[in-house]
Image 1 (cartoon, rainbow, N blue to C red):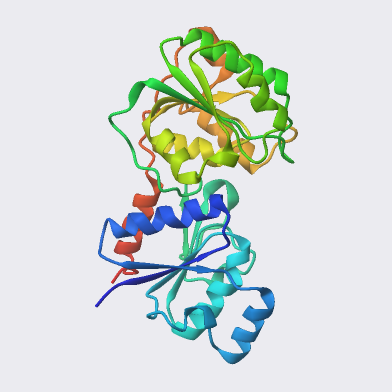
Image 2 (cartoon, helix red, strand yellow):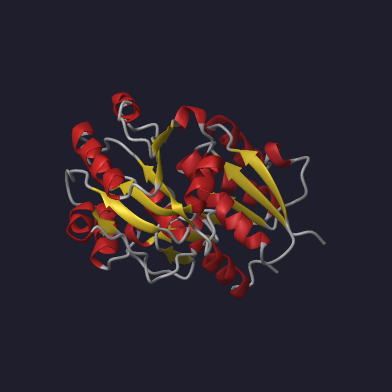
Length: 302
């Protein structure tokens, strides 16, 4: 009998990265079928709860597991569980009580309690696999942007990029921006005269292509505000550098990033300037596979 997974999605790339990461890790352990279902509206969910139905899945085989990341997926997951009795696995700290879900997979920086239905992770899950055959001539620079926790200065970031590119002339660098990156930032990079740098605008690039670049690149620089891209880069086995972005206030996310820097799993820009060396972490990050193995141990994949 097939093992069926319903992946509830809100369509957001960061959330999809988490749930797809766990699904593909499960698929490496056992044969299964994955069905992607868009999260329902609040009105539809309320109706489904009252009728004990889940209309979006009525034509699908009942799920063994119901996965989802993102607050917009939570109520749909509960409706699906009520209608089908499938086990629910939420991939973040939920906006509802933890007891509403069979299992909660939550980054360490987001949770402080210890319960049987919680697995904590080093950062959010992602689908990127460790690559032992990196391209030494390939470098990647991943840019975030202003956020409630971090400020942003185009000139400061540009200056750091210029130093990195000048110090590694044997590497071809690709700069990828994101929806939060100020529009003028990529224009400034395009106007540089360096021959060993190119750009990859997010508007013309899908998440699969970005992941392929992360998988191949031997050295990756990430702006400090982009915690998910930091963990994706570490998961790929790259040497990861941290572009300096002004921190507005201390919070769980910034503490997690600072902890990685203290353990030298990532190298801050100011430290790199002293040695001009970007070293790889001595820890292999593969949280999706680790979590899938724990699901197997707990009997959730039977």
